[in-house]
Image 1 (cartoon, rainbow, N blue to C red):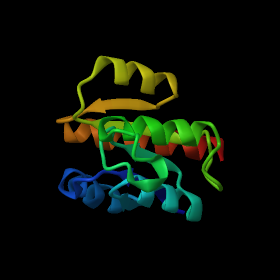
Image 2: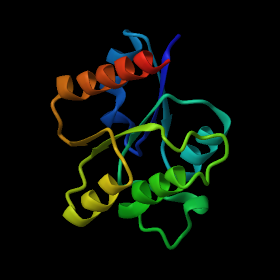
Image 3: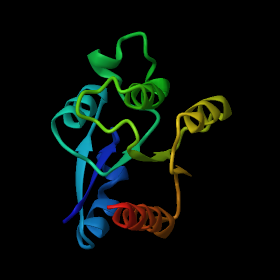
Length: 141
């Protein structure tokens, strides 16, 4: 059975190389380019892992008051609070972002993340993080 990852990333080129490598090794990768797409996919599909950028267009559901630089944090808050129907509030989350903001980083880590990787992260570090989490999931099931 494939490990399913939802990547929330508004710049597809930033995750395409990971998709290629992960697909060759038993992962299914799905992309959401904004908050609305992410919430819709989380409601309607089952994912094992979430790769979350911090800054992306929030969309209507996260609300116009949500600044793009806080969209990832707002989405993770909704997930952890169980506000997204059919989404596991304890889903393993990998932050993969270029945003350098200590306060946001501190706040998002409090919400529970399995890894916090800053772009440009080493390709092998990112891939190894996904493999590690896949192995953890397999031990639990």
